[in-house]
Image (cartoon, rainbow, N blue to C red; front, side):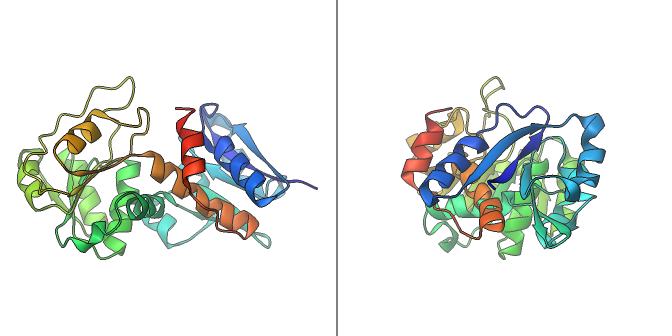
Length: 270
């Protein structure tokens, strides 16, 4: 019988995950279906509470259900640090969960900007939402010094306290960028339909990495500015692709390749 996996969210029809997994199923000769599973907020508690009795080998979890799902799984260290999960799998009769966004981001840097961590300067993160939390926790766990800046100082301070990072006021962002090894836009600014992100990158040293978690458009105004200034831009598509490898490996026992063929295929849908 074909294995059933999928992505749970509300709304979820826009997800690129079915295309990613279909590519891997064909490449590795795996008989499985990856389903789009719309679950309304009113039904989320019941869905995850009853997940052990569902037909799914595992699922990805997206907005707005990551914290709801967390309450119904055996969470690993990454998920526990976040209080949220985006990947569920079965271990015997136990439903387990993790948050793969942080590791997916680090893998995207490794692929998109090899040697990025040779620079001793701090990683500077703009934002304090869910994506920022994943990235900050992953970087701190890797032993990197991390600085967080956010429009809401309270949120930046809370993230810094929870993760072991340092929070700064937005007014001091330029000073932080002058020493940065990598700068990350972990907000939705610059996304299609959102206002552009306005940051002066001129304090940054040449060849320093500028990453954006936004992938629609693939080249955001921030990344275009970074490229023009001789910095190393890393787009958000890599994080999307690499975070998906965790579920695939948990469900099918293979670590899938994130290669140019996959990247070009998904980029063509953006």
